[in-house]
Structures are given as structure tokens and as C-alpha cells.
Length: 130
Image (cartoon, rainbow, N blue to C red; front, side):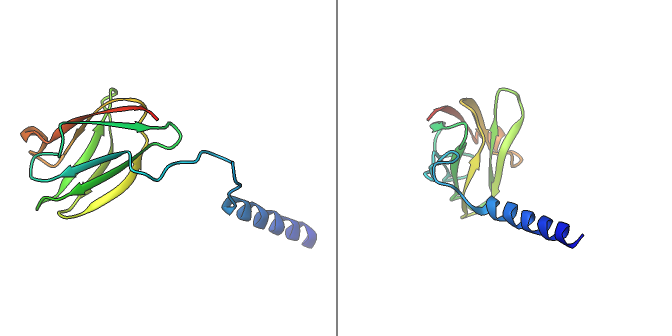
């Protein structure tokens, strides 16, 4: 019984250690560079009406979202399937970098804070294969 427990213990340690070891050349190498930067310079708008970005299927889209306004704003992605995703809500004066899994295609970007999209805070995004 004791040797069986010892063997299980060592197997558990080996599996745990293996989870933390990254072998060179294994898995995708994802760039840390931002693929898409969206700024909110003032109420009810993003800094552009349309954006173009490149992304890879294995790494996703690295987004930098900055709110330079005096109130909170969000950035929401809406694809062809009608399902919103990748939502981030930022308070005034805050910026965040995050990754969104978005395949090649066209998207609507919008702010879902009540009244903001209705007043024009939206843009289009085209993602091409990187």
C-alpha cells in the first residue's frame, strides 16, 4: 500500500512539474504586440469609424482599449452570428490590453453603456489573417 501511494505521489509531482515546463519549439509563438488600438477621446465616439487588424487563429487579437473621457465606456465586438463578445468596461482615464479570440472577418465595435451606441459610438473592424 505504501509503495502504491509513493508511486502516485511521484506521478502527481511529475505531472505538475510538466505543466510548468515550456519546451522550446512547442506550441504557437504569439506576439505580444498590440494588433488593435481603440481610443475613446470624448463622449459618444471612438477615435476612428473603421479599423483594420491582423490576427492569427492560435493567438487571437491583442487589443489595447483606452478611455480618455470623463465617464465610463465599453468596447464590445459583434460578429456575423449576432453574439456580442470581448466586452470590456473602462472607467475614466483607464487603459487595458487584452486578447480576444476573433476569426478573420468583419465586426461591429460598439459601446453598450446606455445611450452611447445610439448616439454614434460604434465603428467597424475588419480582421485579416496575420
